[in-house]
Image 1 (tube, rainbow, N blue to C red):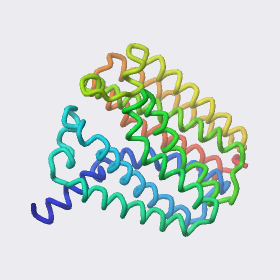
Image 2 (cartoon, rainbow, N blue to C red):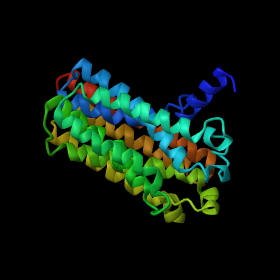
Image 3 (cartoon, rainbow, N blue to C red):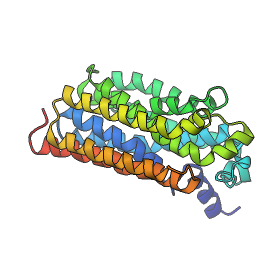
Image 4 (tube, rainbow, N blue to C red):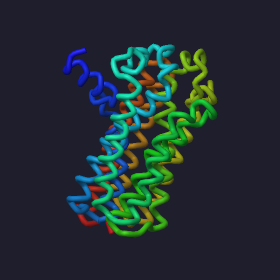
Amino acid sequence: MTTASRSGALLQLIRFDKPIGTLLLLWPTLWALWIAARGVPDYHLLLIFALGTFLMRSAGCIVNDYADRNLDGGVSRTRERPLVTGAVSEKEALLLFGVLLAAAFALVLLTNRLTVLLSVAAVLLASTYPFMKRYTHLPQVVLGAAFSWAIPMAFAAQRGELPAALWWLYLGNLLWTVAYDTQYAMVDRADDLIVGIKSTAVLLGQHDRLAIACLQCASLAALYLAGEAFGLGLYYRLALLCAALLFAYHQYLIRAREPAPCFRAFLHNNWVGMVIFAGIVLDYALGSGA
């Protein structure tokens, strides 16, 4: 294999060509940084967390593919992944995983002691999530916990403390993550049932749409309570209203449970994170945020 082919395979391994995962991890991180700073966060923290988001998502993709290397060949969407085809060896994947974790930890060391301590939990969550689908139908909950952990880390880095209200933000993001990852799991449900992969989509069956709707509503409620606790006003509430309309559109997309529209609904969640972030930014920029 040429150097270019090897590099391409490694980039495919970390989903460099599919940034949706990085974006879904980045938006709640930005929510937390802006709220923790009551406006624009420290620029060095913004850079640290933006780079850290990319590194941790990339590391998470590797450990996910490593965990599923003997199963992905049986799923149509994943049978061409580098660890399945042999384009990347298991040793190379683990080496790159270690390099990415080391780089992310080096960034965390530029913050403070509380953030460093919280980063240990972040690594544990990111590393164990892919294996949960062997033992529980709720791996999406573990993913939600992992994807939300940057929220307390952002508060720790910016404020040096963990205000109780941040856990409303954490809960809102966790519920939203379970909702959109269930949409994602609906894409692979038929194959997952054959190869034995567990997920909320498999668990819920024909109740999946109702459960996603409940999760979306509960997420909005938690995010609303977070906004009230942190003194966010009109623009933030309008952003939540826009998010509710986007959620309604997602329900339309998944109405027939067809894989392609379910995948579009999953991808469309990027707009939810963006809209909520825009609401937070506008609230602080125009003076209604406290």
